[in-house]
Amino acid sequence: MNDLQNLFETLSNAHGVSGYEGSVRQVIENEVEPYVDEIRTDKMGNLIATKRGGSPVVMLAAHMDEVGLMTKYVDDKGFIHFTKTGGWFDQTLLNQRMILHTENGHIYGVIGSKPPHVMKEDDLKKPVKADEMFIDIGATSKEDAEKTGVKVGTPITPDMEFKSLSNDRATGKAFDNRAGCTVLIEALRQIKDIKGTVHAVFTVQEEVGLKGAKTSAYGLNPDVAVAIDVTITGDHPGIEKKDSAIEMGKGPAVTVSDAEGKGIIVPQRVLKWLKEAAESNNIPYQLDVGKGGTTDASAIHLTREGIPTGVISPPSRYIHTPVSVLSMGDLENCVKLIVRAVEIVDRFF
Image (cartoon, rainbow, N blue to C red; front, side, top):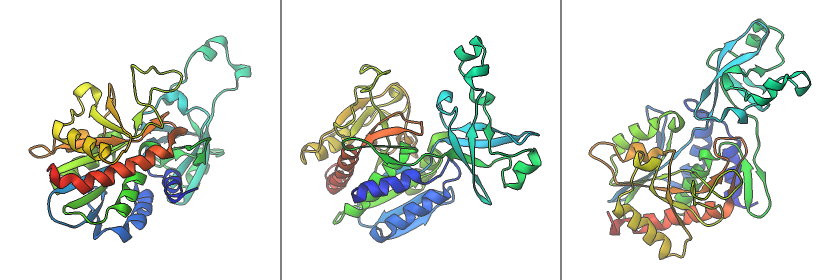
């Protein structure tokens, strides 16, 4: 396992649901500190790592938070009821093992369900909704559950560890967007002599409204920005190429527009810059026009009087599940593209 994969594994295995990014932020801070001139955490919780230079000023953004759950209610029998934090397809939650992050430490539980032996035919046909699910931590009563430290507001994440798959693929939780964080950290290590200033921003609460990107972009007011986030692929059963033409293993995706233009339509000058960086360095890339889903770029480009913004994405299968899959080769090419783009940014902005 190479250094990039080791870093990616560490970040994927870290926990930090939206609004509770503290532990993953500490991991990232420890990784980037040797490679930047200044590092700080702003009032919102964004981690901002800066390589100082002149102009132009470039903002590179990758969100730290992951989708998860939050404790809503503990019933009299000690079962935990929850709300979703970020976008989940409810059926991916059923029968998962979860970690409840209490002030006393990790408490483990499972999202249980009735066994098929006692299900009626109608039950077998009906999908279970998240608001009908519960978490069993082994408690015998509400008081027993509360003794463990579980209370209203306790954040919850899946208990899933990073694993290597065949070829150069890997699987794990929180690839959205620890993949982007991995790319940004490694890019900071490799960016050397540059004329401009680079602000690497590891943002908070992207999954619940692009919140950290809005506030950090306003404060930094860069000349140009790039969001680094995963994008869906159309190369596995259940999805068609017309829904996503992106394939894993064929290089990073460069966004042209997302959410049918309601998110971002990337300026032509930004596209020209990113395409030139890829083509002049023989870095494979794919152009992406997305139907749904947005990134931090959608918030950044509308900040102040407008900030020219692009998006570079490692393709990932099964986003917003604990078993996402991506190619390490794509991750490496994302790093190369970011580094090369920063090297030539003064020619475009």
